[in-house]
Image (cartoon, rainbow, N blue to C red; front, top):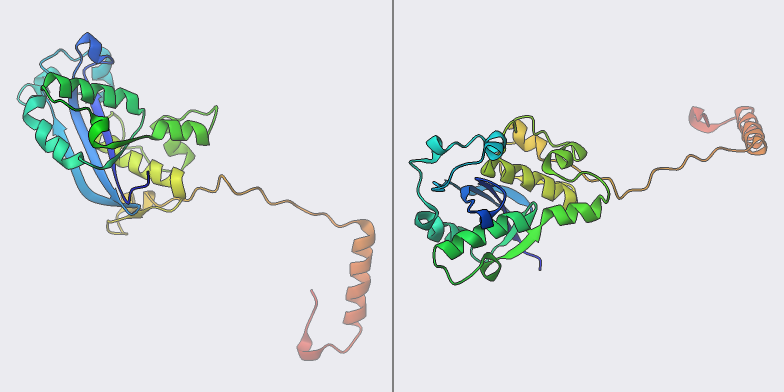
Amino acid sequence: MTHNKLIMLDTETTGLRPQDGHRIIEIGALVVINREITNQHYHQYINPMYRVDDEALEVHGLSNDFLSDKPVFSRIVDDFIEFIDGAELVIHNAPFDVGFINHELGLCGKDFQLEDRCVITDSLEYAKKKHPGAKNNLDALCKRYAINNEHRTLHGALLDSEILAQVYMAMTGGQTKLKLNLNDQAAQQGMTFDLSGIPPLQMVTPSADELQAHRQWLDKYRSADTPFGWDPD
């Protein structure tokens, strides 16, 4: 299904498996309309009421101390669903984020899952089909499409949604429009072209006979009175 409106979405979590009790601690979402990256976004930190794994902390840097005064998921779920309801969500490695969101919806007593309210597009699966056998995480895709992500020292849900927006637009069509000031360096970084589908130019080398015929043709016209000082070289 093709939508003029897309929402890039990412989450950060306390660990890898909601089945083990892990919870969402951050949600970031960014709106793209008619391939234009807008300033419309949703961003929320969440108190997971569960210990953040040391490995996860190294990835996103969100500690339990930092999250202790943030709202729990049940307090923000209605605003979150209102923001994304009916949209096409583009998520990198969608099963991970969708699994966590559906787990949280279940804990809140909601009688629906994310797929019931939104269309889900997995940008990682798209990248794997477009670049089979290559690394297709966000860092690798940024390098492939010349998108500057040097500011991404730690993972962050909203930051990763912004990067995903640039990557996905580059993967799916080349030029990206941003609803930002063109003097903004970040906007310029979002403009890129995908030339991977264009075959390389072939060099044709003339034969010795063709070179000799060309020299004879040049000698003929150099010896003639050519109008307006025209020189075939």
